[in-house]
Amino acid sequence: MRMKTIDLVVPCYNEEAVLPLFYEEVSEVAGKRPEFDFRFLFVNDGSRDGTLKTVLELAKRDERVKYISFSRNFGKEAAMLAGMKYSSGDYVCILDADLQHSPELILDMLDALESDPALDVAAAKRSDRDGENKFKSAFSRQFYKLINKMSSVDIPQSAQDFRVMRRKVVDAVVSLPEYHRFSKGIFSWVGFNTRWFDHENRQRAAGETKWSFGSLLSYAVDGIIGFSVMPLKISLALGTACSFVGLVYAAYIIVRTLVSGSDVAGYPSIICAILIIGGLVLLSLGIIGEYLARIYLEVKHRPVFLIDQTNIDPMGK
Image (tube, rainbow, N blue to C red; front, side, top):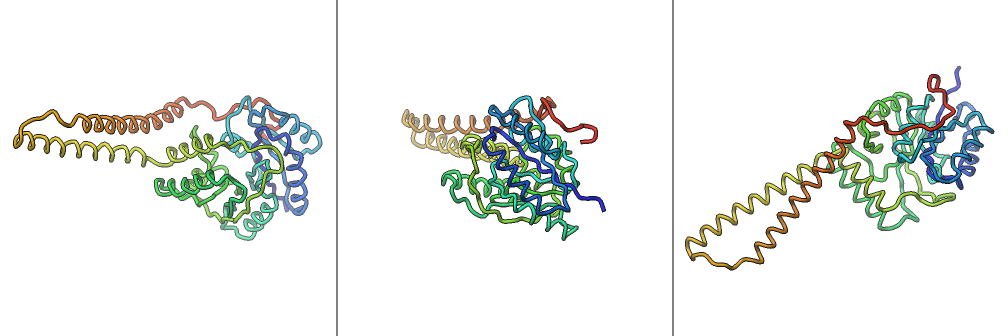
């Protein structure tokens, strides 16, 4: 019987300090399942430290190590897409290089997939947020509540990119051509039978987090706009409500003028009305602008990433 292969897709951005630790721990875990052929696929996302050098050294020592190095930083979403696109394993696992995703959980995920042919994806979700900034944690919780109310896809609270997928699932994800990618939404949109595994948060083994609050906010906006038109509907509702209030107020002014005559009072209320309506107009234009910007980028059909170097044969992967 042919040995089943599992490709470990590992996005890397300035992870020089942690990569040797990651390689040793994952190799130890892989050794517990000799019936599987574990292969590493590191995706260097334009790192500015010695990440690429470290990956090249690992590739010289271990033929299981494959790598893709981008021409610049394209972001984690692009790195995950590249890894999935150039993978060829029966199973594909996505996990972070910082060891916050426990490699031991991969074995439980594989066991679940092997024991249940109807199962297509084994995915992790965080069971706690110990050690994380309280403000970021609260923001994350509210984001999941908001996007699940606004979007037609269901994204479980604290869902992670950490997952093991069958080949057909990976092919389905890669087939989606969009430029602005929100993988958590894409994974939910393609469907397939998924089992969720609770995953306790781990501290980074080395290095520093690359996710600032600003980048998290931008990521949240991408997710909402990419999987919901609700902001446009809200904009329409606000405009309709303002128009209705304006008509009612106009009718009131006409009636009052006919009954009591005209007056010059009301300057503050006029200024307030102008500011409020003007603010709503600008808000609506901003929402429309976000959607138009994404349409503009999509119709250009630029590649999501550009590869500078790799040791993967594009024909045989």
